[in-house]
Length: 271
Image 1 (cartoon, one colour):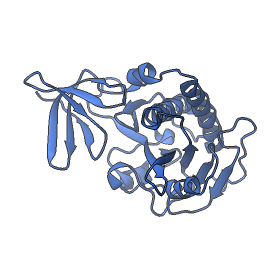
Image 2 (cartoon, rainbow, N blue to C red; image 1 turned 90 degrees about the vertical axis):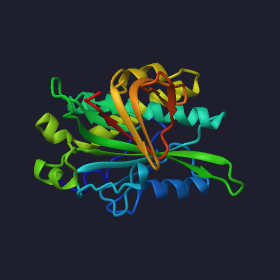
Image 3 (cartoon, rainbow, N blue to C red; image 1 turned 180 degrees about the vertical axis):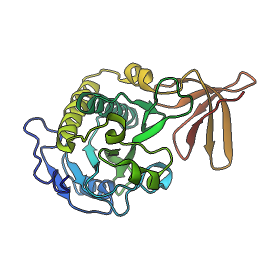
Image 4 (spheres, rainbow, N blue to C red; image 1 turned 45 degrees about the horizontal axis):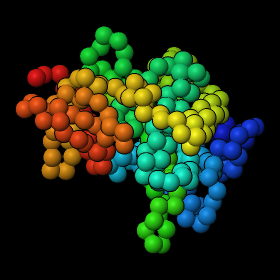
């Protein structure tokens, strides 16, 4: 597999990725896209890296990706008003687009682990879910503190062999290990950009991605635990709200609203 396989990729159609910056190695694709957004870069900029030295996921976790094996991408959007609402919808659209692209190109069916992870759940294997990738959405602010743009970064483990995965995380998986074959990263990138672009345009046109996103979210109706700094919430994951918050029914019947923030979702198997 060539580490330069993405270097010559150019999207033949569409606006998302018409401007694409490729880096052999970079600290963080999100950092580059955020800086470009603050400097006035147009919506549709795509930043791609073959390797990251300071990639990050949610909760400031380090995102490791061996060179030449993954898709490390950040997308720049300038959602219309109201920004907060449209930004949440844009993130949903990105998750759904990635899910569709993985299925189309790699033949692997994945779910979305709230709020922004891509996971694989083999049937009949309770608890044996594997993490394939994740997303991190960040807002570029103006000097006055007003939101100017949304950057959605994502990383997908594509052709990481089993031996390397064991060094990353006990729950890490790749399309190679799940599907049993190497996956063309340029084909996956091209399909993802196409799927995300179409869904984002639908959002801007007034279509609500929430029903489709809700159907793709794993563990709804099941017992979960949400853990964050100084807090721990256990109960049944009932639903997701319009802004993407998770609704959890506690043991006493109270419905607790949990926003993404600095929290982590875990699945529970014992009452």
